[in-house]
Length: 238
Image (cartoon, helix red, strand yellow):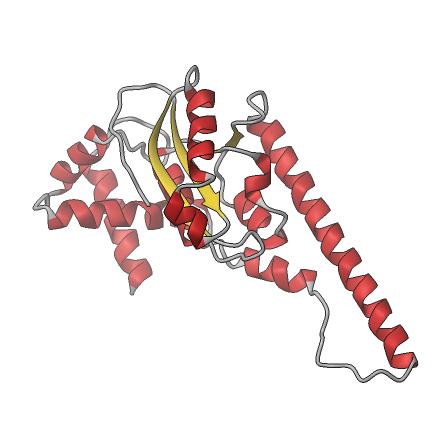
């Protein structure tokens, strides 16, 4: 779910909320508390320009709303803020995805944690998640071996593959920062073109008005820059 707010605030953020069940998502249970925590954190920090809500189990790595939130954060060059550290779950693939996204993550329940320190925390969380998964796999294999020794018939269990999870996370990369930036910009450019803004200069003015920074972080776009992005976008789609 996306709610876009145009603001002149210097500090801008993308908010990501997660509820574990469809029932919680429909009732707002848990979501209201997360929004309240984020609002309290940003009272002195800035303003949410877009928010995304995920209704997913914490153990699942498929997070479409998270992908949209990361794309929005990269597009506007702003951090993502979550209500609590535990909202990020203990999934190896999920945490690795955040680390590879190039997006700064803030925690409302740990307001002093940001920047390199926040990235370090994510790295430690990913390491702990990988360790826990490995220990669970080792314990399960030991139990299955003991059961087999006792003559118990075993099913088709194959254990937990950390390398498979890491491989899944690595597929998120889209061939470098530049290619990923083009990928993030193309939906906005297509939207503007569908609204009738077709010239490079017109598109540049629209991106500048929306306060979307260039790849170098500048606040104003030129027609040449827009043309370059469109060419790369078309070639990547081919």
